[in-house]
Image (cartoon, rainbow, N blue to C red; front, top):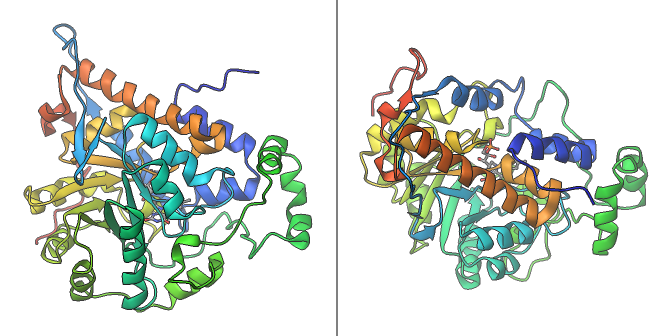
Length: 391
Ligand SMILES: Cc1cc2nc3c(=O)[nH]c(=O)nc-3n(C[C@H](O)[C@H](O)[C@H](O)COP(=O)(O)O)c2cc1C
C-alpha cells in the first residue's frame, strides 16, 4: 500500500479532494458568498513575514501550554466542526488522535457522534453549543455535557445564516435513502475508497445531530436542528451572561472580531474568546481574524485567554498568531482534510505537521519557547490591520 503519510496540510487537502464525493468536499471548503473572507484568512498569514537568524538558534524548543485549564502538548486545539460523512469514525477518530497527541478538542453540537462516545476517547473535550432553542434546552445540553465529562463550554455566536455561495452550495440530503443514494450515485461511485470505508463500517452517513437532542427526545435531523437554531432570536450580552451562570467551568465565546465585543465577553463572564470569522463562513468581507487580533489582545489586556481560529495551515501560522498575542489557536479544515485523507492517523499526521512546523519556526527565529514570542518577531506590513475600534 502506498505511504499514506503527508508532509503538509496542503497535501492532505489534495488527498481529501480526491477521496471525498464532490458535495462532501464542497461542504468543507464552504466560505460565504464570494469567499473573500475564507481567502483572506489564508492570504493574511502569507502577508506576515518572519526574520530568521543564522546562528545561535536554540537547541531545544518548548511548546507545552495550558488551554482553558487543560494541559496541551502544543498551543493548538481542535475547533468544533459540524460535518457529517467525512469519515465513518468521525469525531471519535478525531478524539483518539487528540488523545494520542495530547491536545484538547472542541466538539460541535452539530457533530455526527454522541459526545459521551467522544469524551470516552479524549477526556480533554470541550462541548460547543450555538444559541439555539430556548434557555431551558441550552442549559439541558450543557448539563448533559457536564454529566458526560466535558471540561469546558464553547458558545459560538458568529453565524448569520448567510447562505448564498457564488460557486453554488452542495446539496445536503435530509436523510440517506434509496432516492438520495440514486441522486448522489454519480459523485459517490467515482470515490470508491470513501464508499468502501462506509461499507466496511456497516453504516451509511447518518445525518442526525445526536448532541442537539434534549433529554429523551429523539435525535433530530440536521435540518430540524438547523431550523430550531435559525428560528431562535439572537442573544443580548445579558442573555449570554445569564447562560454562562449555568456552567461552572471554563467558558469560551467563539466568534469575536471586535475589541469592543471582546470587552463585552469579559463582562459576560467568559474565561476565553476565540477571535474568529467561522472560517470565512459568516458574513463575507469580515476581516481575517489575524488582522483584528492585535486590537483585541490590547483590549483584553490579559484578563482572559485569547485564542484565534481561521486560516491556520502551518506551524509558522501558529507562531505568527502567538507572536501577535494569541495564547493558542484552533484548527478547523486542517484536521478535516487529515480525517478525510486517512482517518485517525490523518488527524495525527496533521497535528505532527503543525508541531514540527512550530518547532522549526521557533528554531529559525531563535526562540527557545513559545513564551518568548513577541510582536517584533513578525513583520507586519503597513495597512495589515483595520483601524482599531475604540472599546
Ligand atoms: C465544514 C465546517 C463546519 C463547521 N462547523 C462548526 C460548528 O459546528 N461549530 C462551530 O463553532 N464552528 C464550526 N465551524 C468553524 C470552525 O470551528 C472554525 O472556526 C473554522 O473552521 C476555522 O477556520 P479554518 O477552517 O480555516 O481553520 C465549521 C467550519 C467548517 C469549515
